[in-house]
Image (tube, rainbow, N blue to C red; front, top):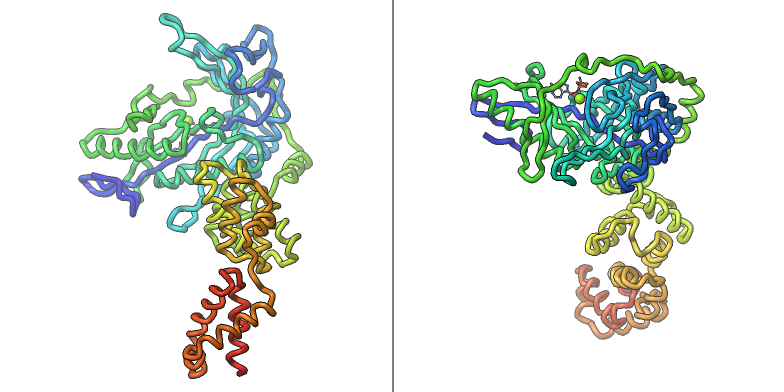
Amino acid sequence: MSIAPESYIVRGATGDWEIVVGLEVHAQVTSKAKLFSGASTTFGSEPNDNVSLVDAAFPGMLPVINAECVRQAVRTGLALGARINRYSRFDRKNYFYADLPQGYQISQFSDPIVGEGEVHVELANGASKAIGIERLHLEQDAGKSIHDQHPRMTLVDLNRSGVALMEIVSKPDMRTPEEAGAYLKKLRTLLRYIGSCDGNMEQGSMRADVNVSVRRPGAPFGTRCEIKNVNSVRFVMQAIEYEAQRQVDIIEAGGTIDQETRLFDPNKGETRSMRSKEDAHDYRYFPDPDLLPLEFDEDFIEAARQSLPELPDAKKARFTHEWGLAEHNAATLVGEKESADWFEQLIDELVAKTGQPIAKIAAKASNWMLSDLYGHLNKAGQNITQCPIDPARSAALLALVLDGTISGSAAKDVLEDMFATGRDPLVIVEEKGLKQVSDTGALEAMADQIIAANPTQVEQYKAGKTKVIGFLVGQVMKESRGQANPAVVNEILAKKLGSS
Ligand code: ADP
Ligand code: MG
């Protein structure tokens, strides 16, 4: 029994099974203050430093909605191509836990702030797929119970209590671990583009509950298990793979799947049971009487829409269709807002320096950035935000190649020096004597000399074996100690040989 990568189907002893996945992603809203109090959301503070009386649920405290969190949720909904609900409200989700002092979480149940939408993901085989969004709602985070600091007691840290989360619920549209990974990455990219969440999974600002079931291809959905709080893309993919196999094994052995909540253990690569799944009615949801419903007018939604930057799909389309970039280059560049921004600055600088139209230089510049520059960055273990060379200097280097001042191979040497020293490319070119000789007077003299010294090749050329011009160009290059511009040499030789 195995998961066949080519079809992404679990091959069981009794036949094939299809995996069905839906994700509930919790994304912490970028905001200085919590959802219903003015307490700070700073990461890494001392335990219980960022706790107001509201977060600690002192009697008589009243929640006050943070308008910035509402605005960010609406912007996120728009970025997900989703319907923004003009009317939404908050409900209490009741349960007891030591790190939940209110005894309920304020969430949204029947009337979430955002309704259905869609996210497009690209897969390794070049296909793209739409993943449906069911809803996005706002809710508060709980505190944290700490079990390993005291031999007999559990300690409680309420710093996270009341922090604003967006819960983004997908439809059960994913069929493979790869699709789930691509969806999560795309979501993170979108959130970072619009700045509504920093997408930092290690710090817990984004985490996923992963719902997995299996079925015979085309059959109705099977019973799902929900794997809680998975905090990396890789773990999400591993958890799905393990969980699907586990369910197939159980069903094929004659068993049934219990709907339950499970945990993923990254060390073992396994999921294990945590508790049986609770249903909505277990939480006794009811409207929070302390909070008014949210009602938006069109102007508010329109203002949020106007505040969105160009989103990655649109940017990618512009890079490929208008700027002539290869599909793969465009996809890589827009994957992180920082790399797309850096590239666009590079292009601005390059256009300013060379006066060439964008469509003529952008593809070359993207190849240079992704192979040459990223080659150095990868070797140094750095990302584009740590790049020691800025777009302006990079454009200065590329401009030297484009106007023929230096050759492509000399540019690689200059880049290596720039990366290490941060020096100006022209200074390096002068110092190392890398300038190509394009001065036709000097090159014509060299060409005459080489023609005179190689009568055999010249005869062959004139007899129609025009390929020998390569040999003659090589001789001139050698004579110039590699500094001649080969394109110019070629032109000069062809002219001389053709007309004599
Ligand atoms: P709950 O809020 O109780 O977890 P929902 O119906 O809101 O339940 O679904 C939660 C998530 O589970 C959604 O992302 C949905 O896509 C996913 N899901 C629902 N049914 C299945 C299924 N049979 N297999 C896999 N995922 C599912
Ligand atoms: Mg759930």
